Length: 268
Image (cartoon, rainbow, N blue to C red; front, side):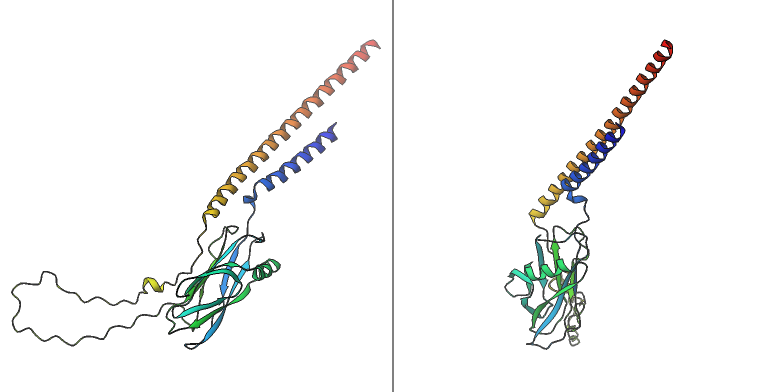
């Protein structure tokens, strides 16, 4: 009897653990996409330069067929010619930014080499002086870690925005023949020059924003996690009940056996 109860409890525990893992994939660690780029690419105005950008999956879970969105921003002074490895790319009018989906070739290489950075070239044409770096990012709903999803694209050694040229100082003003009786109501002020980059020269890496489908997917995973937790909890309760019933049954058997022994002794 004891062996049957132990076997039943073991099977029940294994079954509930499997159901919990299936019903709650949010417990898994997930994927971890990391973006990198290779610096040191040089070029003159009019030339097309290829800058390798790479992706590695550092997480335990493969990306499989999940949607991965790639976002590119060309360094200031260059335009995007081709985003190798990307598919269904959408460019802005000036071709300074692009948003693509991860292509099958690049995806397959990443899946086959977990933890290894796999590179594809980003072809850029230099239109003028490079004054700020670009950016590259990869985003997936399967990746809960966003800190390493983006990297800068460095061209001609420019790793941060170059300061704008300071205006030449104006000639000394000639003294006024007759000073004004009252100060001007709105005196003019000389604007201060600054080395801060303008909004168009931002060097923050571009990170693809999650879609509405991603938000609903997170809600679904949270619900499934609660379901899995409930299943495991019920399983533990059932296991405790089975052990309790076994102990009660074993106690009754011992009591019955003791009564029979006393009756036999009296007859003798």
